[in-house]
Image (cartoon, rainbow, N blue to C red; front, side):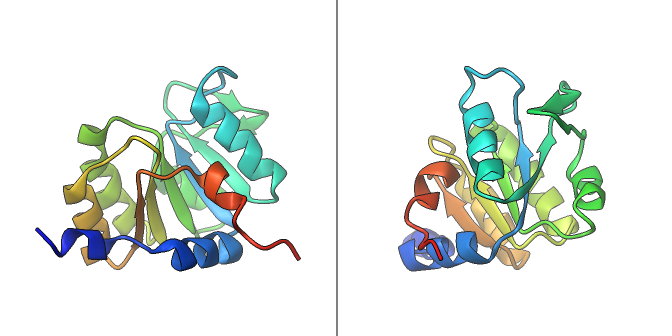
Amino acid sequence: MSDLPALLLDDEDIVELLRTARRIAVVGASSNPARPSNGVFRSMVAAGYECVPVNPNETAVEGVAAVATLAEAAIALGGRIDIVDVFRRPELTEEIAREAVAVGARALWLQLGVVNWNAARIAAEGGLAVVMDRCTAIELHRVPRG
């Protein structure tokens, strides 16, 4: 099991991912402003990322039309998802990792408190970069502005 941490991006690579990413599918995004996924969604949009909420129970998040699946998100984002940012329970993330691989995403990002090593392995074996148990909005503050 010692190889598992090697599946994850290090701090420098996380900064580079956020610097080069443009399109983010936020799985589990909520229209409820009290939910962390809503705050992160707002932060990422404010930082200039093109974000699509992926939540079959929402119609829109912060004025952006929600979609039900990552396949729909890929279409909404012009065929390319840089980061699949996941706000779901850990036991649901393995299927999300498979979907992220299927749509050709660049990275799977499991949010703060979301840990699933099987999902990380699925994504990494599918060629995706993996971040786990970190918040995109918090990490964004480490990206050089310029």
